Length: 123
Image 1 (cartoon, rainbow, N blue to C red):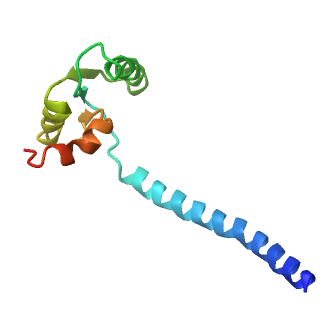
Image 2 (cartoon, helix red, strand yellow):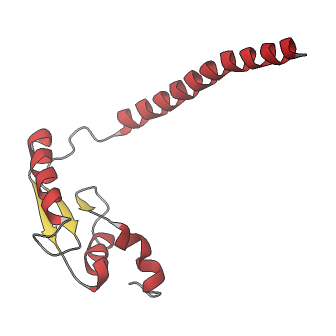
């Protein structure tokens, strides 16, 4: 009886890596399709990152360091735009109403995740 169990376990171990590899290959293929479909000239103008918190805070400081590194790597200016107030909903609203072109980004935090329960009517 124990031989049969050992045989079953070894066959399961052999099948798992194949299944994992096939999943990775499918994911890689999908990612390659999206890479081809991506705009080749992005970014062609400055990128704006809206931080819905006050300047100099715990969220703003790291974002400025990240923006500086992104500017170097992308070869395009990354602007950090602080829009504090109303539990981060002001900055979030600015991004929600921005053109969906990928040039206006939001630095979100757990505050954004719970705002829907705190503020039932968000504009």
